[in-house]
Structures are given as structure tokens and as C-alpha cells.
Image (cartoon, rainbow, N blue to C red; front, side):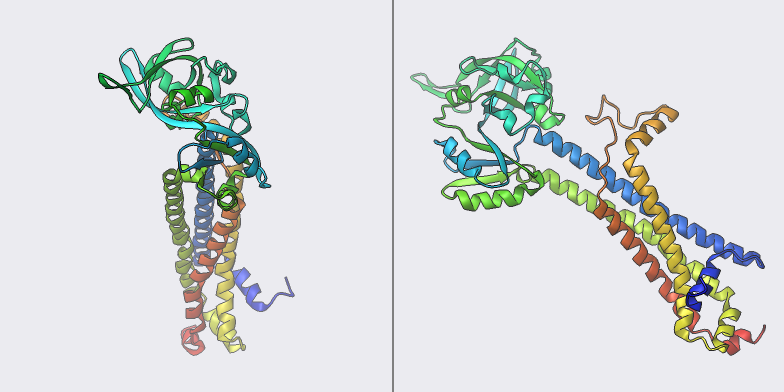
Length: 418
């Protein structure tokens, strides 16, 4: 401590509570409150962003249990030689596996109940290579989709809406009708429900069904699959890999990654996170700029000390450094406390929230209302460093005006009535 510049020594002394004056203690109390405000704002921002990241990751993982990382399809609507396309795509170092699919819209009818749905034709033996839909099947199994049997797997909410279960029959109506001498009539086909899946995402659970690839081609009168679904090593690199594949595959083939399929949702989440970050940063700013009033009071109280230091040869810049050290330390300690608290809570929120629910006898996310009944958390260290850096910068900026005012104190006027 003795080797520190005197500006640091005096600044550290002013940070501590004074023993000779109740006013000094009051100023230090305000400093403590400012420190606590910064800590609370930083911790709140880290926790909220971690929870939002957790929700985003949870929803994204549920989407990708049904959706592929990348889809490759032809502008004509079919890929005659899907094996060649899959082989060419797998030459990319990031592509792990490929599987064909048929994608089409249809109406599902049962006992007067009619629902629109996306019908996806798949190969049961190939589909687990590109998605985890097999693990989402709650009743029956994916292997029950057999060629020529015209079996179907429904989403859990779709099956509930249609009032059907395992072994029941539903009727699919193709979008293109059948031309007869009597005119165009709907083209219908009966399918047997052999399984029910639950992805955990309402859009898929209530509006998607799976049938065998061959049955889909026959029912929708397609000569070949719609395209090829790809699974890659890192799903977060899907946009880059899709762009590279679009250049390598060439021809009329089109690539589409999972973020493009749900662009509206992810854009909304990104906007929400940005706005939440701005709002909670304002809370940190309010706490940081409370330092202004603390330092102004300190400067007013310490005018005699400032005058004596100036008389002993301290420069105005040295006086500024003293109060910038005081305010900077308050901001630094508050930020460090907030970062530590935020990290501890974010990493243990799945334990803390159930404990609070048990103590208070409430449930924040009711299973009957929300698909996700637990509060997820996904801490990103980049968020932690960004939040901590912003808090320290704001605290430092808050010290500039009071320190500048302290440097302008004139020794003669300050000591006139001492």
C-alpha cells in the first residue's frame, strides 16, 4: 500500500467510512448504496439474459428435434437422384449425414373434424440420422411406418384435436383433386395411426404428421423425394455451411438452413433480447450515476482537504485522480459483486427457483399452461464480460464531472473560513 501513488491512498481513504464525522459516514453509506445498486443491476442483467438464452436454446432444440439443420431441394419440386445429391453434400467436411424427404400440405379428416397439417414423408431407417424425432415418439415407434401400409404418425396435439389414438383411422385429402367425368373431386386416402410424437413445440405437435416416403410419393403423385435433409457437426454454423453448399452443389438446387425456416421467431427473440439488454443497462446507468451525487457531496465535504493538498503542491490533475479513484473503486467493486452474484444465480437457477416455489407454495410456470415447466438458464461468458465492461465504463464516466469540480477548488477560498 505504501508504494501506491498518494492519489490512490487518499482515494482509498475517502472510500472508507469516516470516524470523526457523521457526515462522512453518511457519504460512505451513499457510496455503499451506489455500489449495491450497480451490483444489483449487473446481476439482474446477467440472470435475465441467461434465462432468455436458456429459453431460446430450449425452443431451438425442440424445433430441431423435428427440423433438419439444412435442407437441399430443387426448384422443380423434386430431386430424381437424391442419393447422388446426398453423396455430393456429404463431401463437405461439416456434413455428417443425409436423408430424403417429401414435404406437402394436406387436410386430415376424422368424424367431421378437419385439420390442416404438414405431411412429411420419411424413411424410418434413415430419419434418425438427421433428426431425433424417433426419441420424441411417445406411443408406438417410428419403425411402424412401413412401405405400402399407409400408416401415419401424428403430433400429440393434432391427435388430440382429431380425437384419435393408436390404431384409429384418419383420412388425408390431397391438395390436388382428381379429374373425373363428373368434374374434379377430392383425392382421399385412409391412413392408420401407428404412433404419436411430442416435440414440445405447439406448431409441430398440432400441425405435423409423418408417413413413409414411398407412401407420400404415391399419395402426392411425386416421382421422387422433395429434397434431402442434412445434419452437420455444429448447428450454429448452419448458415455458413448452407451458403457453401449452395455454391458447391450448383444447378437448380436450393439450400435452406434451420434459422431461415423460423426467421420470424428468431428475429423476434433477438429483438426482445436487445430491448431487454437496453432496459436493464439503464438500471445499471441509474445506479452508476448515483455516484455523481456521492462524489459531489464528498467534494463539498473535503474542500479543506483539497485546499491543503493543493497548498502542499498537488496539481489539479492529482485532485481529479483522487476522486476518480474513489468513484472507480465503488463502480469496480459493485460490478465485481454483481458479476459474481449473477454467475452464481444463473448457474444454479434450476435449483434456486424450485426452492423458492416450494417455500412460497407457488409455481411460476404451470405445466397446464406452459410447455416448459422449469426455468432454463444458459450462461454466455461473452454476455458477462460485456455487461461487466459496460458497468465499469458507466461508473468511470460518472466520476468525471465531480472530479473536475474538485480540481477547480481554489485553496484560498476553501480555507477562508477554516
